[in-house]
Length: 316
Image (cartoon, rainbow, N blue to C red; front, top):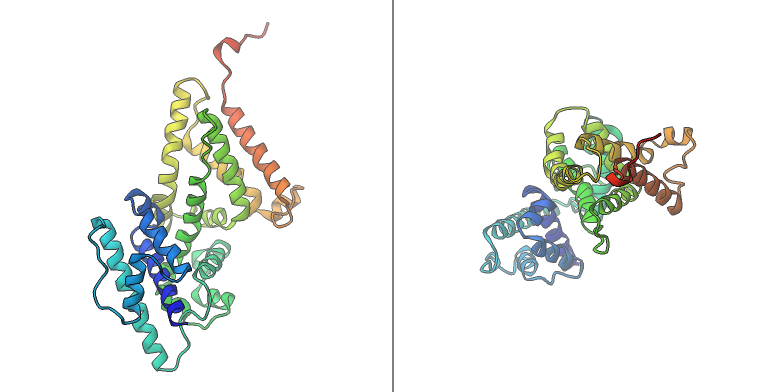
């Protein structure tokens, strides 16, 4: 039980420090994917990686030195130091809570569950409408759990956003098909799979419907951390395909809104979609979702595609 608790804290510390350092994209950009994946995976099997073993040892009071960092870069060292600091802070706080006879901060609720519920609440009620109290109630845990884990509502919001949009980024990075050589067809595939993912996670677009209406630090956070990095290559691709005559020129913003707030809208605006005759997102089967994704991606891509010059003929 003690070791299980220690690995849970180590996983929590890893995720929270990832948030502090800018989320999953930071790890990707600075070559820390291996460290993070190893750290997270090791917590699921008892803490087997070198970094996590050291964190767990310190968590249990079995060691006082930070892990050996000789093989890590400066960015990695910062990550590990933060992980250590966070793990010790959590353990110290929980030890004091137990001495006072209070329940453990986790209340047995997995971190992924907490973040998924929080993301849905922020998407449904908006940042101002959601509260730590209502999210605690939704989770069925004691009133202080979220405060202990995340400190503030903003801290929980950022962690929930990293959880949700980090999952989307990870999924989209796996979409690339090496057998497709035409860039426009790769774009069609990416658009199709984005729509399939959006059906399973309608809270992402719902959240953007709230956050996109106001110029806030929260919108800036999502834009800088997730939208800009994920769209940079698409901006270049659209420009390149327009320059070589493959597609008609289209502003990136037009393409973005057609693909996201257009193609994925039925999954978020379920009552309106039902009124228009679309299957409810919860009732739609896999075939319905794939048919919708195929149709939207085809309409958008083929609407952009230009016929070869030789094939264009003037009507008589």
